[in-house]
Length: 511
Image 1 (tube, one colour):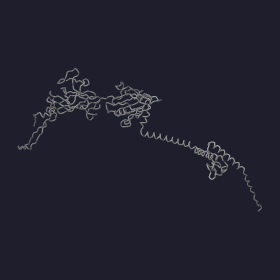
Image 2 (tube, one colour; image 1 turned 45 degrees about the vertical axis):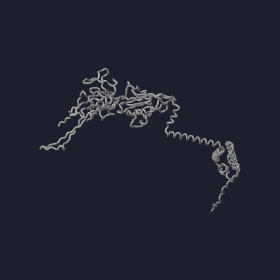
Image 3 (cartoon, one colour; image 1 turned 180 degrees about the vertical axis):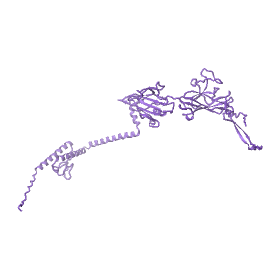
């Protein structure tokens, strides 16, 4: 059967751009060969939804990075045959939702041209940068009768990689870009919204360094690279960089990469150096490399208390652009082997100049304040040990000063021991009891039971109060006299008679 809808649908729904404007139905029954038919109450109902006669077509476009795209919106009234649409003079287009990135602009003739372009006449559109146009917003009508609008992406924006043969969601990089539009007629009836998808294909860009290119650094003090420094790649993290960082002066300084990134092997792969030296070379994705450099520190070195200015040179090898060779683009300088060790050709890179300053008095205070807790504990422990040692030495000195008798007594005892050892070597064949009072080695102090309480005589060796040296000499002289007297006494004793010779025995030889 053929069904034809005779109405125009709900005007309110049409003004809202609804997909369906009305709903209709009819009932049918079935009959057999003998003419028997189903009852009316047993009939089947067919529901017919009346679709909006205005339709906007979904579209997809691809452009190169940093270029404007002329987009032609399509749509019209449905023909009823296969769901197709056809344009009509009373139809126009309007923006429902502006693009998520970039901007849409009216297509207007270039400055000085006729206005507006429309109908069957096609004329060029003025580019946004040249015309200073205002971006289209939600609900703005498209003025070009053929439905042309200009889309301009943000600078360096792309969502489709360079190597992709065809841009689609499967290879998308970052956010997708689209805007929504609709068809309108003269009675303000609107079509359901349609989506226009835009793919922006990447074009290789140079890496960039933004921010200050000079800073001051005190000698032997770690200083962060200047605030506001920014390093990155408009091509995002599509490919890894090869990065070389070198300081110039012989007594220049060291670059310490950001510790959080420097020690992560998943982010930086070192070719030379370790990220804490005068020369470091590594590979990393641009985001990791930029973070390692921007968060880095620099320590200036000096010689003979003289500070040396320095230059930090940075070279980036982008796999897409390789080495950047002179003539250098904006933001780059020409680097030679005098700037970077091992460089065999002139390349383009970045330089950050360092003004080295002599160390200030506050530097040492700051250095102490920044020491970790473990270092502070060790430092104060060492200071405490040194103070304890000096205190003990001071206590000993004060004791000796306040107790000279004890000092002299201990010195005399040590002297007597040395004298006794020397005498033992000199005695030789003399009997150990000669001149020794029958008691072997002389004793120090009071001999038990000798009844001498005056501190001298009968072998007493207690030092008298006075000069220790004079007492030791007199004591030694006394001892020497005693030994000589003992020797003379021993030699004056009568000698024992010699033993008689044995008498021969009377032997009877006859028997």
